[in-house]
Length: 198
Image (tube, rainbow, N blue to C red; front, top):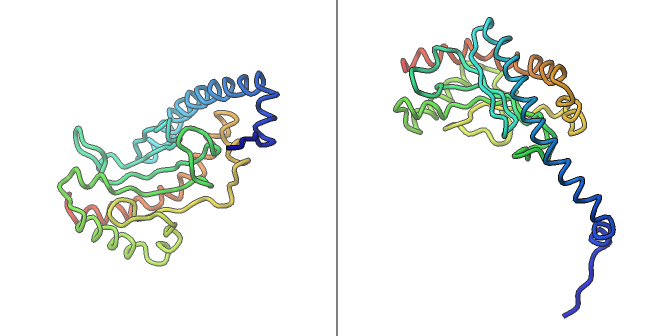
Protein backbone atom coordinates (compact mmCIF):
# COMPACT_ATOMS: atom_id res chain seq x y z
CA UNK A 1 0.00 0.00 0.00
CA UNK A 2 1.46 3.36 -1.01
CA UNK A 3 0.87 6.69 0.66
CA UNK A 4 1.67 10.29 -0.13
CA UNK A 5 0.64 13.71 1.17
CA UNK A 6 -1.04 16.21 -1.12
CA UNK A 7 0.55 19.59 -1.74
CA UNK A 8 -1.95 21.14 0.68
CA UNK A 9 -1.05 18.56 3.35
CA UNK A 10 2.61 19.43 2.91
CA UNK A 11 1.88 23.14 3.21
CA UNK A 12 -0.06 22.56 6.44
CA UNK A 13 2.69 20.39 7.90
CA UNK A 14 5.40 22.90 7.07
CA UNK A 15 3.36 25.79 8.49
CA UNK A 16 1.94 23.82 11.45
CA UNK A 17 2.46 26.53 14.09
CA UNK A 18 0.75 29.10 11.86
CA UNK A 19 -2.15 26.73 11.17
CA UNK A 20 -2.70 26.06 14.88
CA UNK A 21 -2.59 29.81 15.54
CA UNK A 22 -5.23 30.42 12.87
CA UNK A 23 -7.46 27.68 14.29
CA UNK A 24 -7.29 29.30 17.74
CA UNK A 25 -7.93 32.77 16.27
CA UNK A 26 -10.91 31.38 14.34
CA UNK A 27 -12.39 29.94 17.53
CA UNK A 28 -11.90 33.20 19.46
CA UNK A 29 -13.39 35.27 16.64
CA UNK A 30 -16.45 33.00 16.49
CA UNK A 31 -17.08 33.67 20.20
CA UNK A 32 -16.79 37.44 19.69
CA UNK A 33 -19.12 37.30 16.68
CA UNK A 34 -21.72 35.54 18.84
CA UNK A 35 -21.40 38.30 21.45
CA UNK A 36 -21.80 40.97 18.77
CA UNK A 37 -24.91 39.24 17.35
CA UNK A 38 -26.42 39.24 20.85
CA UNK A 39 -25.70 42.96 21.28
CA UNK A 40 -27.18 43.77 17.87
CA UNK A 41 -30.18 41.59 18.71
CA UNK A 42 -30.92 43.91 21.63
CA UNK A 43 -30.80 46.91 19.27
CA UNK A 44 -33.08 45.09 16.81
CA UNK A 45 -35.54 44.45 19.66
CA UNK A 46 -35.61 48.15 20.62
CA UNK A 47 -36.10 49.12 16.96
CA UNK A 48 -38.80 46.51 16.25
CA UNK A 49 -40.91 47.05 19.38
CA UNK A 50 -42.40 50.41 18.31
CA UNK A 51 -43.22 48.76 14.96
CA UNK A 52 -45.29 46.19 16.85
CA UNK A 53 -42.90 43.22 16.91
CA UNK A 54 -41.19 41.13 19.56
CA UNK A 55 -37.85 39.58 18.67
CA UNK A 56 -35.36 36.93 19.68
CA UNK A 57 -31.85 35.99 18.63
CA UNK A 58 -30.44 32.60 17.70
CA UNK A 59 -26.73 33.41 18.01
CA UNK A 60 -25.37 30.00 17.03
CA UNK A 61 -27.55 29.94 13.91
CA UNK A 62 -26.92 33.64 13.14
CA UNK A 63 -30.64 34.35 12.94
CA UNK A 64 -32.90 37.15 14.15
CA UNK A 65 -36.58 36.28 14.65
CA UNK A 66 -39.65 38.50 14.98
CA UNK A 67 -43.38 38.10 15.55
CA UNK A 68 -46.42 40.11 16.60
CA UNK A 69 -47.18 39.71 20.34
CA UNK A 70 -50.68 38.40 19.61
CA UNK A 71 -49.18 35.55 17.53
CA UNK A 72 -48.25 33.77 20.76
CA UNK A 73 -49.80 32.82 24.06
CA UNK A 74 -48.33 32.33 27.53
CA UNK A 75 -45.44 29.87 27.64
CA UNK A 76 -45.88 28.90 24.00
CA UNK A 77 -43.73 29.72 21.00
CA UNK A 78 -45.24 32.12 18.46
CA UNK A 79 -47.54 30.59 15.86
CA UNK A 80 -45.66 32.34 13.05
CA UNK A 81 -42.10 33.64 13.08
CA UNK A 82 -40.38 35.98 10.63
CA UNK A 83 -36.67 35.13 10.37
CA UNK A 84 -33.65 36.91 8.96
CA UNK A 85 -30.62 34.66 8.97
CA UNK A 86 -27.52 33.43 7.25
CA UNK A 87 -25.90 36.85 7.58
CA UNK A 88 -22.60 35.39 8.80
CA UNK A 89 -20.05 34.09 6.30
CA UNK A 90 -19.83 30.38 5.52
CA UNK A 91 -17.96 28.60 8.28
CA UNK A 92 -19.58 30.47 11.16
CA UNK A 93 -21.15 27.86 13.40
CA UNK A 94 -24.06 26.35 11.47
CA UNK A 95 -24.03 28.72 8.51
CA UNK A 96 -24.19 26.51 5.46
CA UNK A 97 -26.25 28.58 3.03
CA UNK A 98 -24.67 30.56 0.21
CA UNK A 99 -26.70 33.70 0.90
CA UNK A 100 -28.59 35.33 3.77
CA UNK A 101 -32.30 34.56 3.87
CA UNK A 102 -35.69 35.95 4.81
CA UNK A 103 -38.00 33.16 5.95
CA UNK A 104 -41.45 32.58 7.45
CA UNK A 105 -41.83 29.70 9.92
CA UNK A 106 -45.24 28.33 10.83
CA UNK A 107 -44.15 25.19 12.66
CA UNK A 108 -45.16 26.94 15.91
CA UNK A 109 -48.78 26.29 14.93
CA UNK A 110 -48.22 22.65 15.89
CA UNK A 111 -48.06 23.81 19.55
CA UNK A 112 -51.61 25.08 19.12
CA UNK A 113 -52.98 21.67 18.11
CA UNK A 114 -52.75 22.37 14.42
CA UNK A 115 -51.90 19.18 12.54
CA UNK A 116 -49.75 19.09 9.41
CA UNK A 117 -52.67 19.03 6.91
CA UNK A 118 -54.14 22.12 8.60
CA UNK A 119 -50.76 23.91 8.49
CA UNK A 120 -50.47 23.05 4.80
CA UNK A 121 -53.94 24.52 4.21
CA UNK A 122 -52.92 27.63 6.18
CA UNK A 123 -49.77 28.00 4.04
CA UNK A 124 -51.78 27.72 0.81
CA UNK A 125 -54.30 30.26 2.04
CA UNK A 126 -51.49 32.62 3.05
CA UNK A 127 -49.88 32.41 -0.39
CA UNK A 128 -53.26 32.95 -2.02
CA UNK A 129 -53.83 36.04 0.13
CA UNK A 130 -50.42 37.41 -0.92
CA UNK A 131 -51.34 37.01 -4.59
CA UNK A 132 -48.53 37.70 -7.07
CA UNK A 133 -46.21 38.76 -4.26
CA UNK A 134 -46.07 35.13 -3.09
CA UNK A 135 -44.01 34.27 -6.17
CA UNK A 136 -41.08 36.28 -4.78
CA UNK A 137 -41.20 34.17 -1.59
CA UNK A 138 -40.89 30.74 -3.21
CA UNK A 139 -37.24 29.79 -2.65
CA UNK A 140 -35.85 26.28 -2.74
CA UNK A 141 -36.48 24.75 0.65
CA UNK A 142 -39.88 26.23 1.44
CA UNK A 143 -42.20 23.65 2.93
CA UNK A 144 -45.95 24.15 3.32
CA UNK A 145 -46.10 22.32 6.64
CA UNK A 146 -43.44 24.36 8.41
CA UNK A 147 -41.78 27.06 6.25
CA UNK A 148 -44.15 28.21 3.50
CA UNK A 149 -42.42 31.46 2.50
CA UNK A 150 -38.78 32.25 2.02
CA UNK A 151 -36.22 33.86 -0.21
CA UNK A 152 -32.47 34.13 -0.40
CA UNK A 153 -30.76 37.49 -0.71
CA UNK A 154 -28.74 36.36 -3.71
CA UNK A 155 -27.17 39.75 -4.30
CA UNK A 156 -25.41 39.43 -0.93
CA UNK A 157 -22.19 37.46 -1.43
CA UNK A 158 -19.97 35.85 1.22
CA UNK A 159 -17.58 38.84 1.26
CA UNK A 160 -20.62 41.11 1.85
CA UNK A 161 -21.57 38.99 4.84
CA UNK A 162 -18.10 39.47 6.31
CA UNK A 163 -18.65 43.23 5.95
CA UNK A 164 -22.15 42.94 7.51
CA UNK A 165 -20.74 41.43 10.68
CA UNK A 166 -17.67 43.68 10.79
CA UNK A 167 -19.33 45.98 13.35
CA UNK A 168 -22.55 46.25 15.34
CA UNK A 169 -23.60 49.27 13.27
CA UNK A 170 -23.26 47.49 9.93
CA UNK A 171 -25.10 44.39 11.18
CA UNK A 172 -27.88 46.54 12.64
CA UNK A 173 -28.23 48.41 9.34
CA UNK A 174 -28.38 45.07 7.51
CA UNK A 175 -31.09 43.78 9.87
CA UNK A 176 -33.06 47.00 9.64
CA UNK A 177 -33.04 46.94 5.82
CA UNK A 178 -33.83 43.27 5.36
CA UNK A 179 -36.43 42.83 8.12
CA UNK A 180 -38.74 45.45 6.61
CA UNK A 181 -39.93 43.23 3.68
CA UNK A 182 -40.76 40.53 6.23
CA UNK A 183 -42.63 43.03 8.40
CA UNK A 184 -44.75 44.00 5.40
CA UNK A 185 -46.12 40.43 5.39
CA UNK A 186 -47.45 40.78 8.94
CA UNK A 187 -50.93 42.15 8.14
CA UNK A 188 -51.60 39.35 5.66
CA UNK A 189 -50.31 36.75 8.13
CA UNK A 190 -52.46 38.22 10.87
CA UNK A 191 -55.52 38.12 8.62
CA UNK A 192 -54.91 34.42 7.96
CA UNK A 193 -54.38 33.69 11.66
CA UNK A 194 -57.67 35.46 12.44
CA UNK A 195 -59.44 33.18 9.95
CA UNK A 196 -58.33 30.05 11.78
CA UNK A 197 -59.07 31.60 15.17
CA UNK A 198 -56.08 30.08 16.93
